[in-house]
Every structure is written in structure tokens, then in C-alpha cells.
Length: 305
Length: 232
Image 1: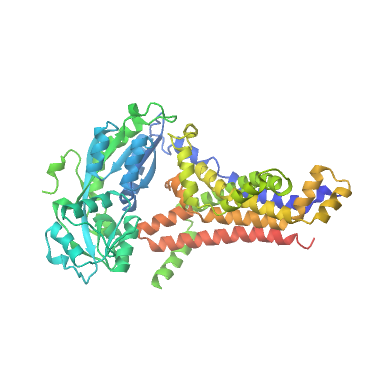
Image 2: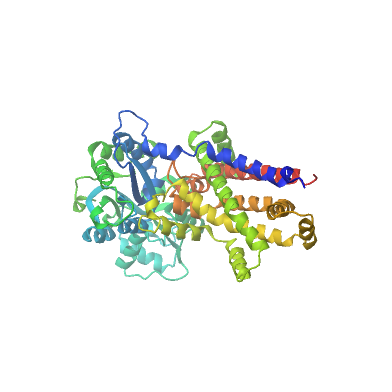
């Protein structure tokens, strides 16, 4: 028996070699990136990994792609961005899975701050929500200025409304607006997409429905959509972003401790004057108008006036 | 139709301009899914052999679980691996959540049942005559196993191909445990999801084309290895 010349072995060896080659050549890369920032002038923090839980809107709009390299360059931290709905981002904070949060659901954030989990809670910026709908505008929202009337009109005409349905900041805002209007959204016309904002806009466009969206995502997707802005400019439609670090004292038992220094550095970075200037200019080159308004140092009551 | 053209043009641009980000994502995808397939093979083949050849109580029950796990939804795997790897989870101390390593683990969980199930089935199908013959020729246990595995080499390669195909195409687990972190744990499928949600359809189409070409190339190489030895 010639076991040594067995074909199976050579086939398996080839396989191992091929995969091994693909695997071996780069396997050390991620740790190097995390540990060694590329510039000599950059400081080297003891624990360079910062987990940022944020909403999909900050990532989808491209703002983080602009801000994070600056932060990493200045401080030497390496940010791991987990972009999820606001509900999930807050939940990550609650469980101590994230070091710092950048979110936009003030009413839900309040609970976290009250519990002492969210500390160093700072107003960063706002953009606004808008209601978009098909050009035919069957609920005639373009002629309505009052938000409550607008939502009642959608329900009365049973026009299709696409809800995010994902417990995100935008979804929470939408539910609040229905509640304020005294309408319980039910029926075949009210549909939950369960996906992100971009995807929800596409669904609304395809189904000729209305939806509530943040302006940034709408502008970024406008070219692919057959949707128009039908209502905007109300104070209730402000979309306010706060940043907060997760309190390390609340999670003494975690096997991987909260990176308090990293979280603090990120909060400070988001509200410093240079960063606020970048935020205020972001999007002008592409859309002709800024996507966000920097608000550091203001109070919530100052906004929208 | 215009969108498709734009996507195809964008794909060629991204591939031939050597875009470092796309190149990095592609390499990471290959590395992660390749590693996961390799681990599944190393774990799955011995387990498949035991289940395929040995008789022990509860064997049919275990086999049913393995067979139904072949269709384990990636999001479910992603969720459960997340629960274990989170800082608050039992393996939080490893500090590997939101890393490529976490994706490799999740994808191994997805591919392992496929390798176990298919190799066990293939071994069970080897004819009783061959088994007797090998034994009669005086093979020891190791030689016996090696020869039997040689008998099923076509099926084994098919199992590897199926496992690799399952992990390179999944998105749910990679998204959940990798976090789709730019330049670090972003793979082709999660990058495609992101580009779709950003409304960048041309880039999304380009990434999908790269993914399909990559999957096809690897599968073609494996298939050629599989078919090459068939005559000899």
C-alpha cells in the first residue's frame, strides 16, 4: 500500500497552502494599526482602542469619515465605530459595551444620564428632520404648515407612510410626532421597513409613500429618489446630537474595562472649536449647504430660533 | 440600465486603479473566509469521521442537529457569538469583539456543520466491500482512515467549496461581530450593505461584482483541484 503517495493528502496540502498564503501574509496587520499610529508626532495612549457607538446617520452622511482621522491623528486613539440605530447604541452604553456614545434621541438619552451611566453629556450639533413624499403629494402636505395637521392628513387620506420601525432615533421621533398629533398609526397604509434611513427612503420612493427622514440622508440619496420635501422648518423637527462618555464606575466587573480616558478625549474633541468648525462646513462642497449646525456650548432651548 | 453600466464602470475603475481601501477589504474578506474554512475543515473533518464511522448511542440525534445546523442563519450565529464575546459576556476577557478574529469565529461556526455533515454522509456512503477489503489487506487504523478519506475526496472538496461559499457570502454575522469598522473589520458583504444604505449604488454594484469574481475564482481553483485527480 502506497499511503505516502495518496492523492487526498496532496489535494488537502494544496488547499492548506493556498488558504495559508492568503491568510498568512497579512494576519498581523490589524493589531499594528491599532497600536501604532502612523505619524511620529501623535501621542501613544496606554489603551488606544475606543469603541464609539453611534447612529447610522453620522456614518451614512460621511461626517465621521472626515472627523475620525483628525481625532486619531491628534490623540493617537484608534476609534472602533459601531454604527447602529440609536436604540442599540444606547443599549450598548447601558451594558458597558461602548466607551463613548454619539446619539440623537434626547428623551431616551436623559434616562441614561439620570442613571449615571452617561457622563460628560454634551450638546454637539443638530440637523433637522423633514417629511418627504411623492411629487403627487396626495395628502396635500405642501399646503400644511402645522405638524399635527400634517400627520392627521396622512392618516385621514390613508396615504402610504413608511416607518423605520427599528427603534432608531428617527423612529422614536416619528412615534412621538404621531402621538402629538393624536393619531394611532395603524392599517395597511402604515408600513414598517425595519431598516436604515437610506433603505427606508428607497422603499418610500418605490411605494410612492411619505416618510420622516433626517435632511443629511435625504440630500445624500436625493439623486436616486423620486421624493420631494413636503414639510420642513418646524422647531419640533430638530434632530439634536449629543455626545457622552460611559461612566467606568458603573461597570467595575467588566473583563475589558471602559476606556474612560479615550471616551473623555473623544467628548472633548467633538466640542472643541476646530472640530465644530469642520462640522459647520461639512457638506457645503457637495450639497451647497451644510448638513449639520454646530451647537457646542449652547443649551437645547437656544436651538431652532 | 444606466445604473448597471455605472456600476460596472465603477467596478473596473476600483479594480484597476488599485484603490487601497477596496483592495484592503477584498484581501480581508479572503483572509477571514479562508481562515474560517480552514478551521472548519480541521475541526469538522475529525468530527465528521467519528460521526460517519463510529456507532454510539445518540448518534442519529447528533447527526440531525448537525444536518439542521447546515442551514444556520448567519444573523443568529452573529447574535450568539456577540453575546459570548461582548465585554459583559463569558468570553469578554479575550477582548476580540469587533475584530476580524471575531468574524473568523462566527464564520467557522457557520461552516463547521457543513463540513461535518457532508463528510459524515460521504463516509457512510463508502461501500462495505471496500472497507472489508482494506481491512483484509492488513491496513492499520491510520492507514484505513486515510484510504477511506481518499475514497471520498471528491465529496470532501465539495464540502470545502460549500463551506467557503457559505461564509464568503454571509453578511449578518460579519456585521454583528465585526462591526463593519472602516479599514479594520469591513468585508465585501458589509461594505456593500453600507454603500446601499448610503445610496452609493454604483460603488455597491462594483463591490458586489468584486465579491462574485472573488468567490468564483476561489471556487474554480478548488473545483480544478477536485477534478484534476479524478482520472488518476
